[in-house]
Structure formats: structure tokens, C-alpha cells
Length: 420
Image (tube, rainbow, N blue to C red; front, side, top):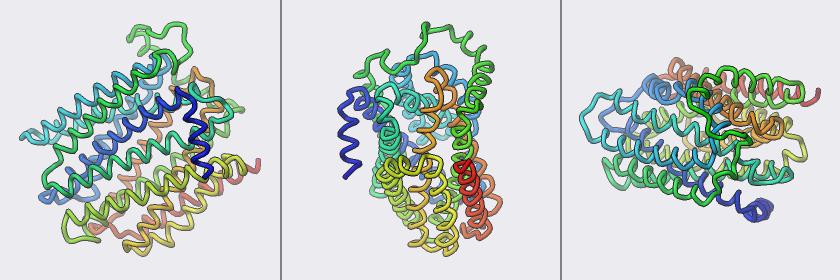
């Protein structure tokens, strides 16, 4: 298979191989931790979760990224990225242990969310750093292949971590604490794996890599403005359009995610354990879609162009969302999970490549942090919209139609831009 050949080529790069190891362990831990939170908040039997409650939890965990993200970008352009992976993962391991302790303690719920927020806030630094460092470990000719395989491998790692967490949760009742501790162990392993990378290999290209924190924070606003201006230049307009399109597709992904959560919890099963098993199946099938995107995107995007490939992905999602989603039954919705995984990841690979190849290394950290902020704001906005539109059992025709219209608008817009 071509994907196996490409992976073998990339694995010859020692830096890429070690960076990939950090990504797999780190995102695998993310999958474990996020499933532990989801099962604790949504699938605990005594909790009668609503779409509004899910939206509130997502807002608590994701909206603060709007504040953390810009600072992450400015600091990533000053700190050695290898050190971010080392200390960031060590910090997350400690914070995950604190979350596990809070789960078994009688504490106010806001304290639990505050602990989870700290873990996911550090995640912004790690993920943005992984994307910004990738061009430092592969040559320009293989960048699109690396963008296909590396983030997708991380997503598959997160899916695998989530699957392990679900298996532990299903096999052992009331095991949320053990699952969180498993995530903490994986975070610690990711920190140890980062020690195999030379401290200066991943950049950034700065004369002074350790400025005072106060100076870095004071320069945040000016740095972000400079990053946005850099992206707004005519030579980088295609990357800006791709970012906007990916944000809208992320919105659709978030809305469908909340709908599937509600369907698993209330429509497809009479108990929380059965709903949890169906959710695990949906996550696995969506992960298969991510893998399929990694297989077909490099050759397809090279042949069509990244902009046209985003158009194809959005158009396919626009067609399949009503065709499969309006049934609100298990098998068609699982097929839709595959399609959405394929199209979302395929568009993301193309967007990552456009951004990385269009911006200078000195700006990548800031721009990828803005990228992450747009991702999370779109996801939370989708959850809020879903909370307004979804009935208690999760079946909403208006929501599916809205998602299809947005996908269609993205396809039309990117098609026109590609022609220009």
C-alpha cells in the first residue's frame, strides 16, 4: 500500500520518528482522559444528562482556550518546543492524578471542572507545538505526506486510547478513576519519550529562546496582530480561506457529535452501559474514517490540489448528512460517523499543509494557536446550537438540515476560490 511505503520513508527521518512517538503517546493519553470525563459526566447512571448539560461541560472545558490559545502561540515562538513537550506532559500527568482524586472525593462540581480545564489547557501548547515542529523534521517534498500521516496517527492514537478507556469502563463498573490514572501514566510516558529529541532540533528559529515571561506576555497582542497580518497577505490567502472552511466543518462535526451522544444515551439503548458501548462503536468507526483519509488524501490532494480536495470533502459530507442522518437509526448513523471522520480529517490534512507551507517558521506557533482557538470555539458553538435544537432523545431534523447546508456552503465557496 502507498500509505505503508510513505510511512516507511518518513520513519527513516529520526526526528520525525521520535516526534511521532511523542504525538502517539500524548494523544493516546488525551483519548483516555477525554473518555473518562465523558463517561463520568454523560454516562454516570444517576446523572440525567441533557444536551444543555453537555454543551455547558464543553463550554467549561473548551471556551477558555480562546484565552490560552493566543498566549500559547506567542510563547511557542519563543520557547524550545522540545521542552514544551517534556514539561507540558509532566504537568498534565500530575493534574490528571488530581482529577482522579477529585472523582472519589465529595467536592463541588466546579472544582472537578477546574482540574479538567487545567489538563486540557496545557494540551493547547502540546498540540500546537507538534504541528509547528513538523516542518523541522521532514523535508519540504514530504511535508504533505507527513501532514497526512502524523496528525492522523495522533487521532488514531487518541481513538485507540479512547477505546481502551471504554473497554476498561465497560469491564469494570465505577472505574472512571482508574481510567484517569491510566491517562496520567501515558502523559508521563510521552514526557519521557520527548527526552530522545535534541532540545534545539524542533526550533523555533530565535536568537533568544528564553525571554522573560513578562516581556513575552506584553508582546502577545502585537505578536498576534503580526501573525494575522502575515496570514492575510495575498500570497497566503488560500491558507486563510482553508482555515475558515475548516472552522465551519468543525462546527458541523461538533453538532453531529452532540447528537450522537444523545442518541446513544437515550434513543438507542435503555441503559447507560449499552449507550456507552454504542458510543465506543461510533468512535471506532469514525477513527476508521480518519485512517481512510490518511490513506487517500496525499495522492488525491496532490492530484486535485489541497483547495479542491477540501471542496470534495465538504460536498461529500453535505450529501451524506441528510441521506444517512435523517434516519436516526444505528446503522446509517454509524456509516455517517465514518463519512464525517473521512471528510473532516481529509480537509484538515489539506488545511494543515496549506498553512504550514504558506507561513514562515517564526509565525507558525501563533497561527496554529489561532487555528486551535477557531476549532474549539466552533465546537462549543455547535454544542450550544445543538442544545437549542435537540429534543431529549437526540432526533432533530432541523439540526441535520442545518449541518448539510453549512457543508454545502463550504463546498461552493472553496470551489469558487479554487477556480479563481
